[in-house]
Length: 115
Image (tube, rainbow, N blue to C red; front, top):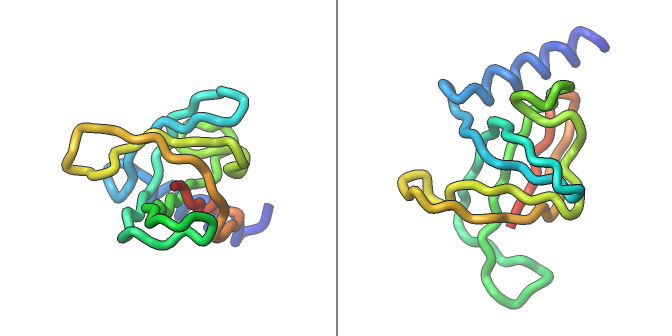
């Protein structure tokens, strides 16, 4: 691993810290493995999903790479994965969202979309 890879992973770990911008979620892999990474969620405005004729809310979720699966994930998000999170940070209720795709990926982690 190069110096840039180490720097990107260190930056991802720092920004995912719950004392900074991160929040803990429940991440369930397609094989039913349950993890609790700390991620950054962009709760953007409702957007049009090209596969459906209705308006769907898409969440961009920044997930750090973590070889131990303690604060992030050791493998990229995949089809069949889902997260349980607060739809509104001010509300106590949670919602389940399914993985729909990757927006970006690098050695620091992934920007995944869930809807």
